[in-house]
Amino acid sequence: MGRKRRMSRIRKAILITVAAAAVLLGVFIYLFRTYHISIVHVDGNKQYTQDEIRDMVLKGPLDSNSLFLRVKRLIKKDSNIPFIERIDIRFDTPTEITIQVYEKAIAGCVSYLGNYMYFDKDGIIVESTAEKKNNIPEIKGLKFNACVMYEKLPIENDEIFQEILSITQMLDKYSIFCDNIYFAGADSITLFFGNARVALGSMDNIDEKMIKLQYIVPELGDMKGILHMENYTEEDKNDYITFEKD
Image 1: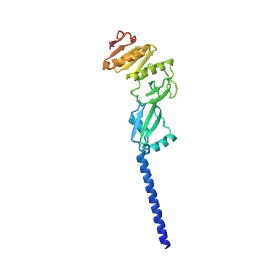
Image 2: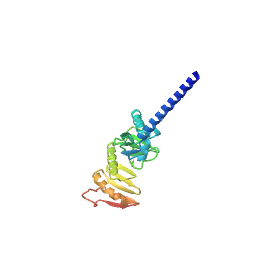
Image 3: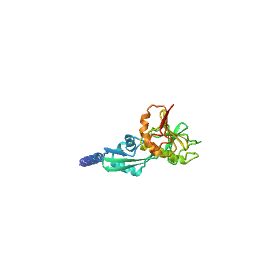
Image 4: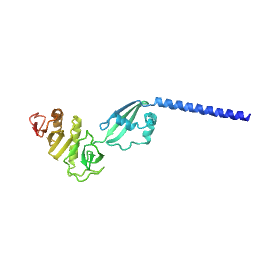
């Protein structure tokens, strides 16, 4: 009789365990299906593709669950990601999120000891890579003796950093992609496009020069020489634009 009671208790315990496991499995399946992220929007990214940003955020298998991801974002911040200031996530629905990327304002980069050092509008070195990012022009002609992460690039004229930022922002605005920007002095700024160079001269009328340049660059092709725009103004139109072949 006692043996039967023991067997009955064992069977009851097994049934309870199986039922509890079934309930937990059902809850897990419900949460997985209901909160599985299937739509991801990415905004604000330039240095990385949408797939790269998605992979940064949804790293592990549980990250694709919006409930888990929401809790994870509360207790763990993003690790240091090159060129990224921060990443915010908006949970639009249980299955849809928007990843908002805030990138660092990079003015340009310089080559130093085999690496490319990227600086912001104040000349502070904020990133370093072994390979150059294609959409950030290399700045040449700056004279400095050292280059240290998170410190200001030591050059004589600090105002040049603002000029560099202005030029790179306008290049981006008008979808102009140059290889290098050479500063020979305050009144001698040159852009390099393959075998062609564009002499902008000073920062005078720089916006008008860039507006005109966006239509000229596609025509340069493999041409070798220098395009003179030092004296160009919107009023003068083409009168002060000449191309000097090498």
